[in-house]
Each structure stands twice: as C-alpha cells, then as structure tokens.
Image (cartoon, rainbow, N blue to C red):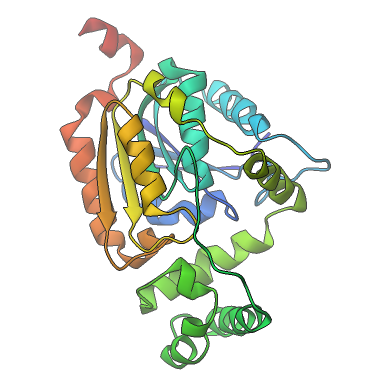
Length: 278
C-alpha cells in the first residue's frame, strides 16, 4: 500500500512526483490546489515512505495507482504529473481513460530526451557542499554564489533565487535520500529499453496542459513539445530562463497558468454521472 498525502476537499487531483521525489515534494502544487480541490499525492513505490524489498517493473506503479484510487473510491480524477510523474499520468490515461478527466503535464515527455552534459567530480563535490549548506541555511546567498551556481543545481534551475533554494532544502534533499535503489533501477531499465509512447497518444481524448522549461537539460523542451503535438487536445507553455525544476523557480506564474487552464476546462471536474448527463 502506498503512503499518501491527502489535503483539501472537492474534486480529486492525483499528483504524481518525479525521480527522485516523494508526495511531499509536490507541495508547490498541493498547497495551492488543495484550496479548491482534494489533492492526493502518493509516495510512489520505492520512494519516500512507500518502501520495497525487491526490484519491480515500471508498470507496477500503474497497478499501485489503480489500487489507490479504488481504495479511496475515486472513479474519476484530474492527474498532474511532474517528470516521471507525467509519464505515469499519460500511462494511466492510456490504461484507464474513463478514470482520467484531464492531464497537467510538467517537464515530461512520452519520448523523453535529455541534453545533460557529463558529470565531473567537481560537479558532485560542489553539489554536496551546496546541498549541505543549503540545508543548514536555506537560500543563503553566499552559498548560492559560491557553490550552488557551480553545482549540478545549475542544470536543474536557471533562476538561482532564494525561494528556489528553499524548495530544494525543504523538498528535494529528503526526496533524494528517500529514493530506493530499486526505484532507480526500475527507471533506468525503462529508459534503456527506448521508452517511446508517442504513437499511442492519439488514444488520449481528455484535455491536457503541457508545461516546460526552455532550459531543461533532463527532459528537453523539444521533447515535451513533441509530446504536446501528438496529444489531440493539448495546450502548451514554455517558460524562458527556467529548467527542470521550473515550478520552484516561478511558482506563481506556473500556478496561475494551471488555474487559467482549469477554469477554461470545467469538464475536467465533472463526475462520471455529471459527464453522462451532458
């Protein structure tokens, strides 16, 4: 059984984190969206408090998510997914379309491609120092200038703001430490197999919103745009001067765009009975 973070009341929004990640690392979304809906943010299998004792297949995540929705008696929900979570959101919509009313896809792609340069020992050293000091004093400008901008954080964010570093301290480090080896191996196996679901995306009928960071080196904006173009009903936004963690760089802008999209697609909040009456 997955450990899950549930907040608010109303129509359910299933919020799926990336790798590494946890349900709590989705707080930038859940704190805002839970004011109008019920947000459900599980720790995926092998992440956070959803511990595992053996290796597993990526498809097991979908089985877990269906079981979670069954246990909460949720017939239909909006799904928001960040990175790996976005891939799982699309897979869930393909697997059980009747349960997914809409998709909000963050820094993700159905044929994910990256442009990350090789990692040096200096990268790892500066990243470790930046993370430790940021944990002790989140958003410390000296640490940002001395270590943060020279660390691997420079490929995750482009706007080295105090708020972005506070999110890293509060949500990213604990999520990284809580990610199991089994979860990492499962993801690597899927990527090495040449994961590509573009040709199946035409089966997804629900409204979709795709958001990307122009400087994303982990899943490029180009691969996100490719996915958006294969979805029948998808709006696309690409934010300049941001990277893979852009919701932590420009949270107000991202949440505002999500709010506007939801307001323009009221059908995503319809229950199965309301949808059949229309």
